[in-house]
Length: 87
Image (cartoon, helix red, strand yellow):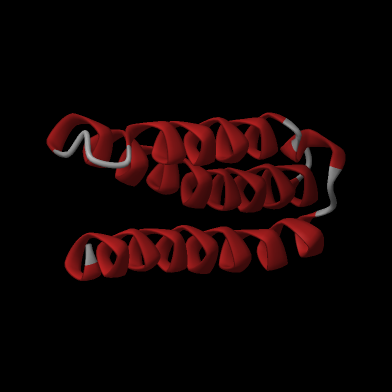
């Protein structure tokens, strides 16, 4: 494999890690708190579906998606926190 091929593979691997971190966050929430189980499980499957489609995208697209998924999951979890506090 050429150095360019190694660089692209490494970069794609880094973007995949963002999705794996998001999946872990959601799984840990499901283990610790069953309050919003259906909504969290739905978001988990959505993130996993996106992660499974990553092979179709360029490295630059993946970088943008990595930043987006981290913010999306953090915003989702913050929203659940607000619902729990106000409920």
